[in-house]
Length: 327
Image 1 (cartoon, rainbow, N blue to C red):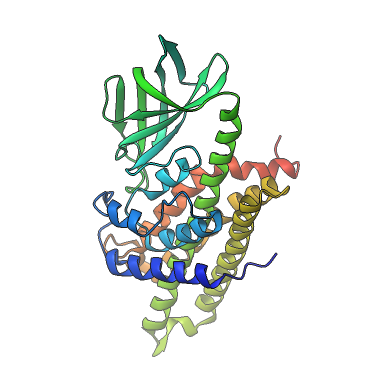
Image 2 (cartoon, rainbow, N blue to C red):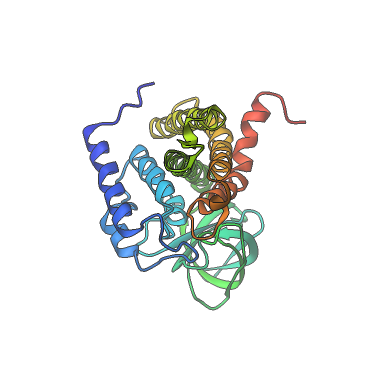
């Protein structure tokens, strides 16, 4: 499979990286979600419904490299189901939430935990059960019958939210029997983006470690010249490149609706977050005490890597199941 980027894709990546470097430098505070940059995000085309899967995956990698503080991923995850102008969160709540129709009007009941992006969303895209099967609905926020409680998680930019519905008015987006297939496509799309984002996170962590290893001097030599450090960085580089290959393979398989999509996604979901965690941990060790300070941006990459690993755990189980390693 040829992963060579086209000229248009290279231009897209370059423009995204230039924008993120200028607007969201690595040293900036990343303790709160930034919704002020949403208009610029739209102008840059990150959530353009006409953008290809591979192009969006490349943007996800750049977003991970810079730790984009805007809630782009929850909205991107919902794009196969609903394209909106404002922040959106996908509430995948089948069968916990049910939808009831009365006099032609739909209402939602139930609750979902661990929803990413609900704290800043202007609209929730909710998957709920109906007598005819799963369906997808749009619910504005705030609204009567909708309660969102934001919790504390390992990544402050993606806190877990508990969402409850008590007769909330809902607008149907995708109805049975089409909703089941649409939800599967949306889940795969969201997972591919997270895999690519994890590659960006790992790459950024490695770059921080390499830069430190070149600048930090001990015994009159940069510490990167010592084998104990150089070999760790070389292994981390190999992990990043393997993860990138698997993430790109999954993105291309999704774009082409390939027969091996499930296997490609399972492999990427297994390898990419693990690589991000491993590389970030190696970077922390190489950077020493500075690597765990709040001011240094490395711990934010480790937090995102751990969050991604937990979020993709279900998809990653697929590769183990396919190999007969799950009992």
